[in-house]
Image: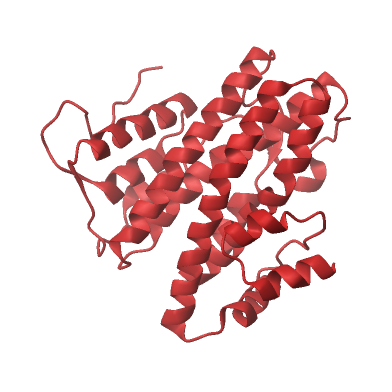
Length: 283
């Protein structure tokens, strides 16, 4: 397959518009090309040749409408109930669990890029925040995929579900809804799940896998904090109380019911209100 080169280059002297570049990466289907494009654009960012056009609208852009999100033909996407469950104490089960996390990280790249492209007219800091998330999610995906390959598997070898992107579709028309349901709900659940998965991997002798989960947990606290920051921004713009409004949105979008254990320390570091943390602790 012929590689499609991105419209930005580390050796060029031309300025690059961040959100347009994000759209190009979002549309890329090939996993390796998407990761390489993220790395290339980040090098251009570090060179100081990237600017942001916050008012630019992409919702009627042909690339946005027809080619996003860009993802490979595999893994096969099933409903969450139809994804086969495997015993976690076997190698196949460990690989399946690692693959599920790898799939989440791949989706998280597209979600961060989509957040940059979909919502216009926001402060410039918003777009840089989500570009940082996209770069770190690409790094997490690379760590996990490399680890899978060393264990004899690869991304796409197991079926997966599309719950993250389904929620993105539900919340596509509102910044507040998107921030509430994706980073503040689904990604925050990862803060709770990471310590459990890390301990299981360590108990199975997979020290490298456990190290990768620690890296992901560290960075995901920052990603959820970014979601919290822009959820509060949206609440202020709409003059609504964040805790009460979150409850309304969780019911509106049929958010998954949260179950313990909860990583209260990580959630606190990510900016959740004490009122919310106490409610979780009471569960």
